Length: 341
Length: 105
Image 1: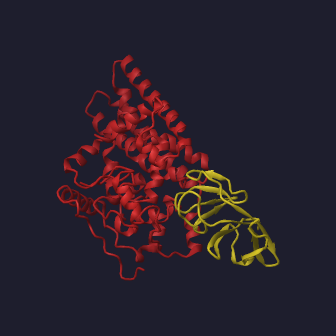
Image 2: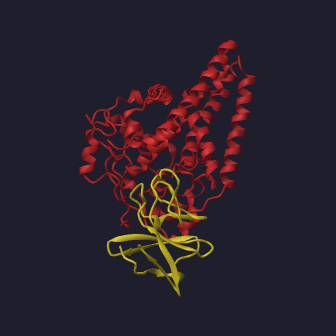
Image 3: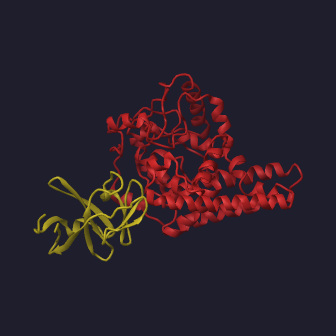
């Protein structure tokens, strides 16, 4: 059975095969065009963040008003997705520091979104850097969501963070008490452990204060607003996130073979901050979310055809994960365009 | 080490707020021109990951690595944004008539 342990036996094989920090395929893009794509501004992100917080405020207020009635179910369901799923794309883009031009603006939203999506910010910053160095390289990439030989029901449980939430909470507690995990030691510089410890302490303090307040007023309503949405609102991020790489090739150094670009509607792209252009994002991480569609237009002739819809991509993901549960050698082989180098 | 001036490229071949790659012998460099015309030649490869900084993005007086978005100060080489932790080498740079030149000592 394939060993996905970061730094494990597969990591040595990857290194021997030249897959560590390798030279990845890149399509040709005119430099002047690329400079336009990479240009930053604060306005787009500020508008998007404002609309996100406004939506959280509106649905949070509706959820509060409807507390105790059945209307609370759709209100909290929407609030949960805005909190526990939409925070993922904000976490991601500000982690790359491409959302805003101004560094501190990226960092403020990054720390807020990290808490909401339930990720310790410093560890995940470094794990994501590794994900970009060694995308879906087994034994190196700590962010491989679609592992082979995993029963499909476990992925369904993960819609509500069944394994991820306890694992992350455990790390926060360990970090808060000064213990650093083996994963962190593999990809995170020792001088950053201090940040992980303090971030974990602050995040745990917020969670504890929420639980104490809920207990004091004898209502779990506060926890429905802070903390629990990271679980009950997690499903939408899993659904969109699995379209990125699941079921595709492992141990390749060509993002055209291990990543998907999926055409999504405006609502999903607002929630997901255009991460549906995932092949393009991996090839050019310096391009901000608001330029990914333009980048896609510039390079699409050099890439495999995009998926026509979220549903078509998810259908393939479900099929592949179910096959891989029984056959770890199965994967979806993407067809490269004949015009590509 | 050499104190000879090495021609990196024509001054006009680098746009303001941009960077180009310059390979000399077995080494690779990034030649940066800031918006005010100041130039800087630094090591071509990022100190964090295997990426050519010449494919990166010049913003103000910083250059961003195209692979992980780490940033260096283009004039001092100091890291200014993670995941970059180690400073890059900045070479003594001058504009000589219409050429950008640098030397290693």
